[in-house]
Amino acid sequence: MSEAENSFHLNRRKDAVKPVRRTNSIFPRRNCMCLVGVERHSHKWRFVVNELCANYNHFHAAKMKCASFETSKSRYRFLMEFFGYVCPKFRIDPRDLKSKHVQDYFSWKIHELASEGCGEENIKLRIKNLRSFLSFFCRWIAKPGVVPSYQDLIARSGYRPKELKMPSSRANALSIDKVEQSIVRAFQIDVRLGFQLSFMAFFGLRPKESVGLVLSKCVVLGGDLAYPYIKIQTASGSKGGRPRRIEASNPSQVKFINVMMSLAEEMNIDALCWPDMTIHRAAARQQRLMSKELELSKDSFDGSAYQFRHSFANSFSALISSGEPLRDLSENLGHAREEIAAAYLGSSGRAGEDSIPELTRALAHCEFEPESFMIRLCRLIIEISFTDLRLALSLALWVLKTRDDEIYCPIQLLKNRLIGENKSLLSPEEILDQLSEHSEKSTVREFMMRAQGFLNLDTVEQRVFTPLTNRIFFG
Image (cartoon, rainbow, N blue to C red; front, side, top):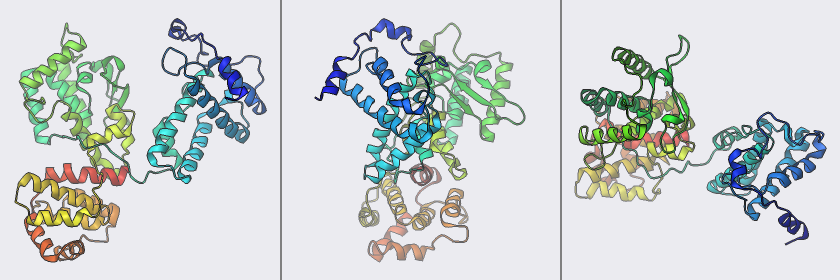
């Protein structure tokens, strides 16, 4: 250890005690002066950073204790690098830091890491770590909201990962008919339960968030030029819930809010929690009713109340042709990370181009089991989409049960968006010829005969188009 580092280690303060952190009086309050009497000038940035580190760098950013020596040293090195880049370039004092300065540095840093050959996961972890260092520093200068979110830093930097890695699919969306049937039954059992399930289905609320909803405080109808919206507060939240605002951005949501508010007024219902019940007891009652009366539980049904959130996420993903970003879906669902919201939409991780011949042969010659055949068929279409999107869309139309040979709307939207309106999809003979490049022609012909019209609309939407469009438009 060098003499400077040894001195830094010995001079660290040890008084980061719990009572002091609880009062939150150790950091400057918002809009208060920092280092009063020290002139603000860009050439004094080293002195300012050293003074602030001497006062605050020994603290842990989240817990009420001292940080480790390695954490303090890493934070100090980053701050010296950050302000060594920002202060000379923008001629600012560290206490005058703004969001545009933060964005400029991280845009440069992201592209530098990418040019050095760092993997996408390493870049993500590195940027999140550095962002947390800077967020803690902004508390020292009474500017806690200066640092943009990780998603905004990535989006504004112009850096796009080659492929958004998503967790294994746990998407288990209900069909529209099933959602409607469950809501009707819920209203017959208990009016408040019907309201709760309705808001879960139309706005993706968590079960506990729907229980804590107070219509007069949380539902804002808006004017002629504004969308109505729902405000989710922390008091009505659940594990991991985030305060947020969910706009009714499509006609069905607007109509739903108007109907629900008029119905609630007629029935004199404001709070969706049952009277004389706490949020926790009401949530337990909701779960009991959904399990016993509606069969929405992991024991009696393939899923749970969270299926309504899955259904909301999948209906939201249908708007991708209008450019709706995954970040908006994450915010509406109340998640900070896009990867979590992506789990509601399904996985699009690839099995490898070498799997196409094996999948084709298996689909042509294996013993016919509908469930196994369906899974392999969807996997084949997704795999082909990595190398030939036109062929994948043409094959999806071939295996889809259509009426009067009409092109199903999402296929048409994808074709127009990605291939062009002037180009048509492949004919059956062209599909046969192109698939024959991967496997024998007789095998492909046998596969196409068995696969024609095999998949229904719901299966294609959930297992093919959801992960496919999620990867194409959000990846």
